[in-house]
Figure 1 (tube, one colour):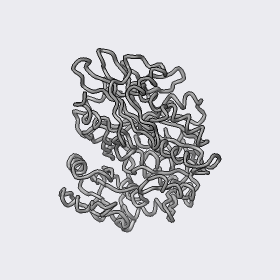
Figure 2 (spheres, one colour):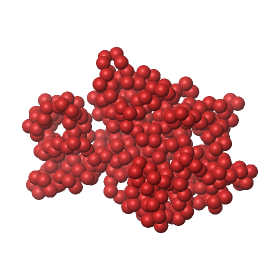
Figure 3 (cartoon, one colour):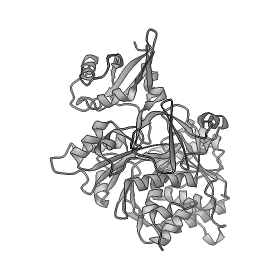
Figure 4 (cartoon, one colour):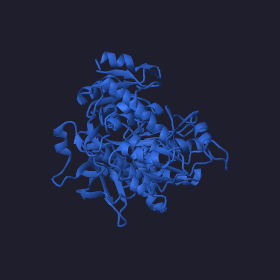
Length: 502
């Protein structure tokens, strides 16, 4: 076989991609979890048997199957079993409860619902019963099993909607995002090719597999033929022994993950590495402050490449290890050739194969696409002369104070370099005189000197921030509210909490 990562990326469906990789390197490992190892051929074989079991239960091409499962080998097997059948999958983050799960089940009209039983003290089976979920079954240790000879032919069409993902909660109302196998393959290929990985690497999945990053990452494993360590529950320093044991070379997930690894590194004496085999931190989610990039490279001795993606478009741009330090610190990388980026009135708009087909609600789809078929992201930014994308904030993160637009991200990047601030979120709050006032909400590291509004504004003045952008309110919290996927800050909760405080 003369398959290459780029040629594998032309696979029409996710099942086609797995099948081609399993034929190419059948005995190489793909999934590592504690003492268990699954090879590419083993994944294909187990997925076919599970597909046969699901088929015997009544799952057919086009059947909507919701699943709310942790990051486990069995979850990946189930995903590829459903892909083998051509079912429509609706992944649900395992931390969600009755309100969010009930909404997802109703809106997707799921005919089956896979749950982990009792997981981390919560009874998902009982919740499924309360919600009246159809076809609920447990899929934690044991999966349906059957004879693959009973299966129909695998699906050949990769452009039909086969995925319903749910926006993960930086706003209060989730939306069902429609994806195809090809849109997920395109997103994963962008990530894989940008990172310059090889079959000798060992990756890690430390975030919920039900997140859009799950298939994104799995496509990368299939394209390049290397394994990843799965973490059912991620916490540092508890997870570090598994990183060391399996010789992980690529880790990350989001900005919050970089900060956690850096915090562990800072506990060690000079010259000792938290994960000796680690050479690259990579991820996406919330934009990273430039100072965080420099601190990771300087103190951990590894490279950091950051990208830009969203549930609607799993990978848009990605930093590459051969980018300059300036580009890696201050941009979100470049798009692949298949992604068109258009800046309209400062807003980033997108068109390409990785872009979703829209939302379950047709009215929401009509609102998000412009007349030329570009997706309105709501993100603000600009392209550099080299084609790198710089994000400057969200439309809703633009604070309008006395008619002047203020970027929350600009202030956040400056505050993240303050030695007594671990993390921050800058928000606009309603103000009768100014329209909105600038409020900085900060976390402090252990042992830090207390910060005040005066010390913060003095620091920002010294860094050259214009006077009209200075925060007029400072709130110190034990922890910023975050979602359970890539740990993005939930600014709407901060606005709700502090809006009535003058």
